[in-house]
Length: 365
Image (cartoon, helix red, strand yellow):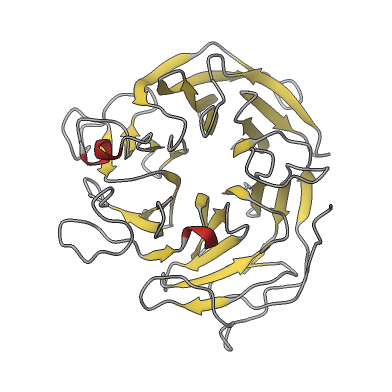
């Protein structure tokens, strides 16, 4: 049965950027960082009147969006395809990531682009690995060159593979890795799993990494899947909890984020607490993006796009709640809009005939 699309006007939390949406939204002060949704704040401005625009449909278990100049590229987890999206919403395969093995939560996951190279994070047998390939051709005829392996031997599993890639404001490549079901590895700085990694575009260890000779940038993570930076260079990361709390963290070099010893806000001196936490059924945060003074978070089980104002990180607003199902990624497009990727065909959602899809959301100052 086709899921009913409910569209009701709502309110957004105050900030420099508001989504131009005609959809359900609520703001909630969360002094304890719980992020439980409550009634809309009465002083919040209206969210706008424009509906999300559907950019493309018919994607199969898509996982990540990135841009090569102004050309959108999408990864598909199980098919290992890299897709190019044209201005009419048509998609074409520009190549596949050989060796990527879809299964469980593994397969072709995150992608990023810099200086004419496509970077990919993929599960291949017992390992996750990071590779890059040169992008050839131009829009409508893009292709992929041969693979160059940058990092191999990241522990893989049927669950908790992490997989997000992003270039930071320092020009370096960051990657999130999950614990792959091996909980203790997250506290082992000699292991690459349960971490956020930092490397040069060639895969080398930067000299100023917190652990000499190691790609490890932060540790004690269960399954982080979103990273983004604000205008001041502060790094944020989303993380799946187990049964108690999902997290939004501010990442500091060498920081220990507690897993598996703690989950969520613990108040323990040796661990860094999240700036906001949510019950997994309400969130399950994956990709994130920073636009203006807000971080936007794509939620899977929560089936919503969450906005957290960077000036008041204890607050949340929800958009698209229950409208499009599971949301896997959100990215800032070159034109300043937000692109959101649904994820209903990954085996855990309830896909509709046009799923999965890319949505474009305008932002207004």
